[in-house]
Each structure stands twice: as structure tokens, then as C-alpha cells.
Length: 78
Length: 78
Image (tube, rainbow over all chains, first blue to last red; front, side):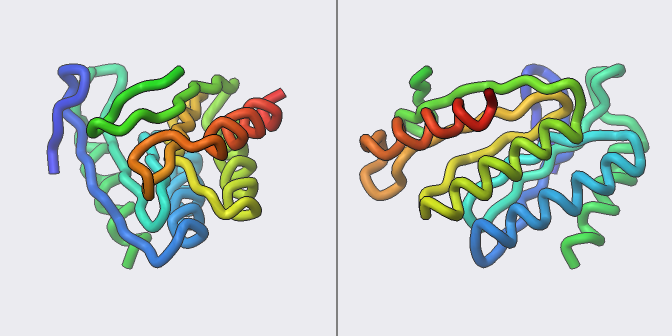
């Protein structure tokens, strides 16, 4: 979903896991994708849950690339 | 510092790093500590920054252990 934070729209999705270790493993998977693509999200890792937010700093909003990265993130979770 | 989120006080501190990879490495260090101690924070990983929040779900607030974990987190960052 699209949420506004600090007046900047972001693509946000919450992924659930069975424990903290699984959540952290997913954070690392998304982190590796981010490094590979040179575009970095905010990753909130909690027990059994990772919330991933994509947006583009430079334009203070959403770029096509954010939607591509969000789709790739969804794919990692499947 | 102590912040309120969803009416629950949390110990929150922001740690800065030179890039995303260093931030993610710190997230993993804190994650390993959390697993070892059986107490888990919220870890917000962004480019060059990790925000760590400690609180105790069961009491909807802060327990002595949260302060201990926050001190151990500070120690990891040094």
C-alpha cells in the first residue's frame, strides 16, 4: 500500500514470519537485492515481521523503480 | 532516548554508518545479540542508519532488561 511519512509517499508492505531469525533472514535477502540494484528501502525488522518501505529520496516520492523493487521484494517472499 | 509509540514507552537510539552494507551488518550484530539473550528489539535499517528500539511487549513498557539490552547495543556500536 502507499503510505505518507514525512509528507513523502512510500510503498509499504508487511511480511510475516514464524520467528525473529526468519524475519532477519528476509531482511538480509532484501538487503542483498537492494545492494545489487543500487536502490535501498527502509527495513523494519521485528519478531516475526519485516516491514519494507520503498521510495526515491531524490524526488521525495515514488518512481517507477520503486514499484519494480516492491515487486521483486514480493517475489523474494514467495 | 525514551519515545512513546502506540502509547508504549520504548528506548530508542539511532546509529549511523557510512553506507547501507555497514548498517545491515550492525542490524545482524544486534540480531545475533537478541537471539542469544532471547529478547528482541525493533530494528529499522536504512541507508547509513539503524534505529534500534527496545521495550517489553508483556508489560507494554520498559523493564530493567531493556536498559541492559540498550547498553549492550551501544557497546556493539563502539
